[in-house]
Image (cartoon, rainbow, N blue to C red; front, side, top):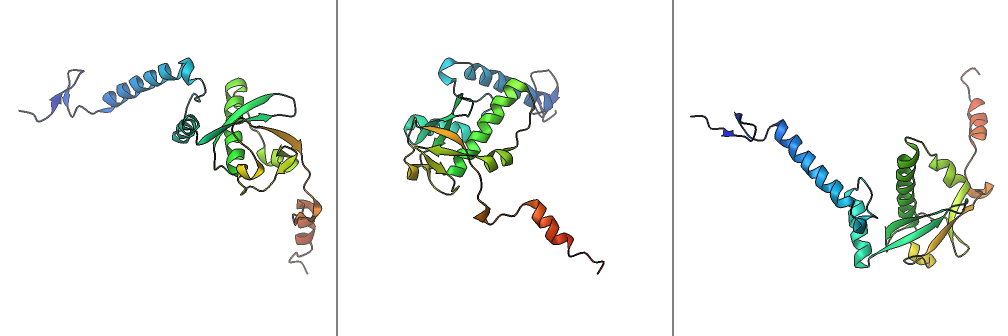
Length: 177
């Protein structure tokens, strides 16, 4: 007598083969899609991560905040972050949200966030949010606040050198001497 059990497909075996896993995964995905299509869960992303779900739960429990970001073209989008979030956390949440929106509307499109943050910054009540480690609450940002993108030029005294100056410096140190 064999020690294996008879599976749903009639085969004798371990019962936890590849087909069983793929069927269970398909069932789970179909149930998840049905749940996410519910209007009550409209703010949940199509492919949520655990951190997305935790952030939305914290929003419902009052330990998160929904912020509205006003773009330069006048359009807005909402981002959810924890109450203890820093400027860096907000920037990462914005990056994820915008990339998801662009992916769903225009397909694969690469956005240069390095270029965006080099030329623009966020502001709240005419205060520029420049320090990544500062908490949003330090600027007075609360639930349902609206932040704005504003042009920002890095000053020459910030200690950063352009690539051109760096190239000229190292160009003079060639081995040919």
